[in-house]
Image (tube, rainbow, N blue to C red; front, side, top):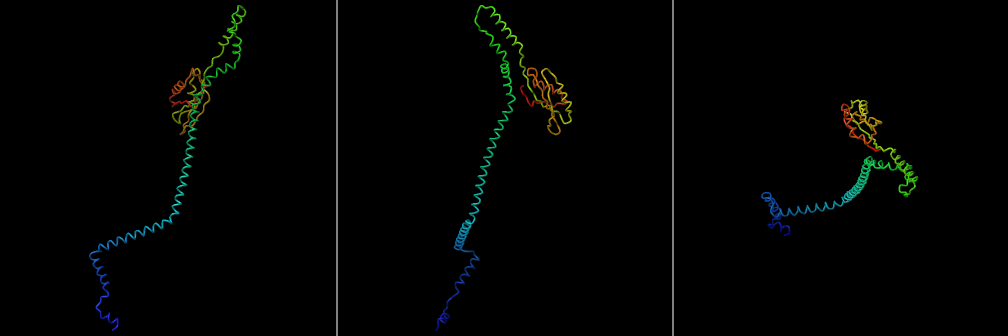
Length: 259
């Protein structure tokens, strides 16, 4: 008997594994997978996630060049920011210097009175006749009994006192620039100027004038005048000019300088 005939005569279930697998699938379909199968599936999912992470890490090396480009752009932006910061600081320092200079220039008219007040002694020095007379007068001469010398000395003292009494006194004057504003653009500016110049008082002299545009067709009258400080003040001028209330809205002092 050959081997094939022996196997054919044996009562063996060669397809048992297939039937067992089919039976297993049947029961899984009815009752769901077993706990062991669930654990196996979880492990397979973890392995799949690990593979995915590895692939992402490997693909990240290709974007390294992009990261370098981004870093270089950030560095260039930082340098540009630093440069702009320096420019802003420089402009701020220049603005502070300009503000300081403007403040000094605005204070110049007020401080100009100091050198003008001291101008009188300079003129006295230039008129050297009085000084020569002072040198010639010997107020502390020797006390002698010569009547002629005493008479001459007295005459010189009298002449010196007469010269002092004839010297003109210094009159303090100021130049004032006024801004006279009308009510609207329909105000007659020629009539307004006539009203302003009609203000007359001792120590007041009106000068040149002009119309300066303000806006919306309105023009203000800018007029100059010279006043004696002891006789005329800015408050009096403003009070007298604002009396013409039909034409004048307000009066401002644009400039004030000692002469």
